[in-house]
Amino acid sequence: MSSEKEIVLSGIRATGNLHLGNYYGALSKFVKMQDDYDCLYFIADLHALTTNPQPEALHENVRNILAEYLAAGVDPDKATIFVQSDVPEVSEMYLLLNMHVGIGELLRTASFKDKARKQLGIKDDSQDIERQIIGNETNKRVNAGLLTYPTLMAVDILIQKAHKVPVGKDQEQHLELTRRFARRFNSFYGVDLFPEPENFNFGDHAVKVPGLDGSGKMGKSEGNCIYLVDDEKVLRKKVMRAVTDEGPKEPNQPISQPVENLLTLMELTTAPEIVQSYRDAYADCSIRYGDLKKQLAEDILKVTTPIRERYHDIRNDDAYIARVVRQGAEKARERAAATLKEVREVMGIRKFY
Ligand code: TYM
Image (cartoon, rainbow, N blue to C red; front, side, top):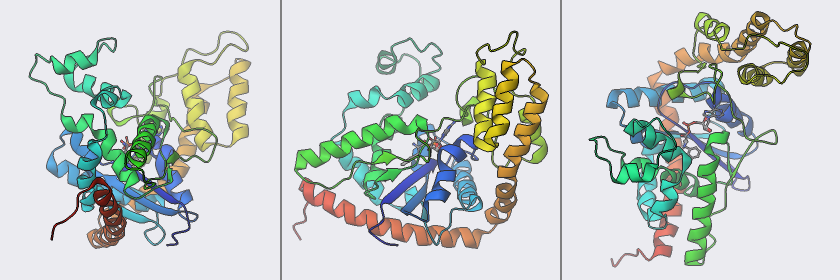
């Protein structure tokens, strides 16, 4: 791997199988970037611990996502594939970087507020979450790992000195924090250790893949996902049941959110002229949602079927998976150890012996 190439790093939390949001926001970019960049892709098992998974489930999820990376075409001969916890340098640097991270900035992070609200069972998002956490009178707690999640993510990126981080739109605030922490560290110690990483997209904006329920983004906890490994029948059924509206009532009316969501999904999978024909059909009130959904299911299956077919074989090949992650861990550790050494030196952690 040439060190002149820009460094790309990204990861996915080990919390279940991957859905189309993960695919278009991240994984499809991983595959496209591996020829032109020096790429490192990992499974974020330490980040998954913030929601206290069952140990067996965590381990299986790491295996599943590894198999999904490989099945989708991430090539271990081109990219470094590793498991986050196989690089213990990350955990040490997480402690060190936390000394330069403000509790206030972590408390204000949108993803933290969302998750904390869920953990405390608070539905009303107008309530002041900081007060609720500090003065929590129930026996529910928000763990400190969740609060410091952005520090750990910044360390994943900075310890590899990554320039580009292919992620979906929902991760942009975390990337912004990473840049801020990098600048702060560099300027506090008067060094130029960390580049400021950027998101990477092939289009001009970050991707947000909508769910099938007519509301927000596709997400594991929203129950609105199409998984890469959904079998054909399940997948078709999900798409056919996707929320729409009652149909346009008059020509050229604005497209409703649920239908716009389906068209957005279509834009990711289907030829542009076909998507346009459905937009035109909405405008002249001739749209038939049954046809749109059949087309969408067909086109999604063209993307997911080859991945699903390879997935099952790879997932059961323990020896292959072990080989891939051992080789990946070695490379990732070597680079992480070199950065950690610099960080310790810069911060004044030096040995007497
Ligand atoms: P995670 O596991 O939630 O999601 C993995 C990737 O999938 C993208 N994604 C989406 N993109 C578009 N539309 C959607 N509906 C959608 N849902 C998920 C996410 O943007 C992400 O790119 N914090 C990260 C994992 C992480 C990481 C890192 C990423 C840990 N350390 C360092 C990059 C670099 C996360 O929770 O992603």
